[in-house]
Amino acid sequence: MRFIFLVAFLVSGHFITNAQCNGSEPVINFGPDTILCQGQTLALNAPPGFNFYQWSTGTTGPNITVTTDGSYYVNAGLIGNSIILNGNFQGGTTTAANNFTTAYGPGTGGTYGLLSTEGQYAISTSPSLVHTNFSFCGDHTTGTGNMLIANGASAANTTVWTQTVNVAANTDYVFSFWEMNVLNTTAVASLQLFINGAPISGIIPTSTTACVWLENAGVWNSGASTQAILSIVNQSTLTSGNDFAIDDIYFAPICLVTDTITVNYDTVQVNAGTDLLFCANETDTLTATANVDISAYSWSSGQQVASFSPTTGGTYTVTGTSLNGCTSTDAVNVSITAMDWNISQILMGPSDCGQTNGYVSAITSGTFADPATYTWTGPGPNSPNAINASVWDNLSPGWYYLSIESNGCYRYDSMEVTINNPPIASVSATPMTGIYPLPVSFTNSSQFGTTYDWDFGNGSTATTSDLSGQNMTYDTTGTYVAMLVAITGSCSDTAFVTIIVNDPPVIPPTVPVSLETANVFTPNGDGANDFYTFNMENITSINITILNRWGNVVYQSTDPLFKWDGKAQNGVDALPGVYFSTVSMAMYFSCQIS
Image 1 (cartoon, rainbow, N blue to C red):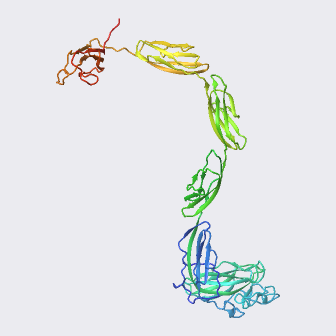
Image 2 (image 1 turned 45 degrees about the vertical axis):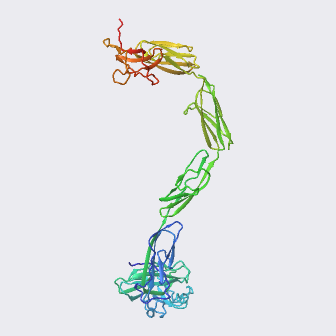
Image 3 (image 1 turned 90 degrees about the horizontal axis):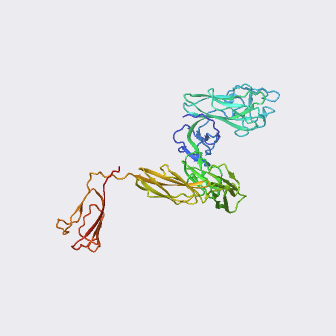
């Protein structure tokens, strides 16, 4: 790859004879592209052994320090011997003696000396010797040698110096010279390098200060060319000023060695969030964010998460580590307003039924940072009623809500104003189930009532002013919900009891009822007549008791399928003898009344 760029170097010193790269030149290797953290620097070092170094930053030394993003390269060169003839103008005072040509004419003299006319040149050891207004300056090489001094022409693109040299094909060359202003003026010459009619450098103005030498240089690759027309051209069109000197023109083959590295800075920025201010009975959250993905967060208080709720005031510092291992830190202040007070007790006075004579009151403990504001609302959470006081009286029953504010902090509580001795309804019934017609007795065991409204669920109602019971007969099948309302003033309470009335059972008249049993049995385990039992038909239940002759109970059963095995209730075989039995039973039956 061929590079065309400006280089700055000193042509004095040691040069190599064969300047083309041959594999023996030093190697430059910056390593792979890299990522740096903010605040880090990277030293890029080109090895020694080159005649010049030209960095992308403009630095001409062997080393640079990287502090910002970018692609950085160096072109390091080994310079051969110059092939310019008399580049330092020591050959004489004419172009022929110094082997160059120029579009400027030789000085013809005049009011100010040899170079009184624009577009003329002279070879001399000091500008002051060829023009009375020019400064006394030494040449670039020794301070006492020759230089080319010009009273600049006002036509742009005027060739100041040109020389033709033979070159090797496909070879890099460096072309340079030194330029100087011969007056202390801002009207300076603007000089540029050309090879074969094409510019190879920028337009470099001379210094505005007289006698200051500046280098102008460029690199050129010969390609297929075997001859180079080297030119120094003045692009200034100024008629006043535009006076300059040139010296030490140099053209030589070079070996260029280059390397490039791209450096990117990790831009991680962590934000700890806005400062927090909250009250001691509340919570708030610190949340760290970042402009890139974060592998880990670490807070000065020990938390290893992005978000947490602080419990003490102070300055919290968070450090975020990016995926590249770079860190960023930010801090946030947390202020927690102390609340050295509390609601220790809420008092309540009940309201009489139908009255508004209840009250609520708050008692606090501790010390307020500034005077407290008490606000009660109610009854109910959405009531528009409110009062700013610690005590609120003349209240109806219901819930009342309190907030106390001090120094911007709040505590909350609530209390229900109840009814003083409200009526409590209570009712019972005997029986609660049966077949019709079913007479039922109701008992009123209510409290604090003055009037009682009865609804028996069958369309019948009653009102009493005492706790007297009530009687009601239910004549039809159904389920009846009887209701008792106990009333005191505008307050009431309700109780219920359920009565279930069934149809009478019906036994078909054709169903026979029978009960048969033996009067002797032998419980000896021989498989014949071992049990005393009944053969029953249409019997729904039975209760049998067997007595000995002295009237003592030896066996009892309610199982319609019972079988007595002759053992007494204590498990001992009964003695042979005469025993008596009493039997009660239920059976199906039906009847018709006409």
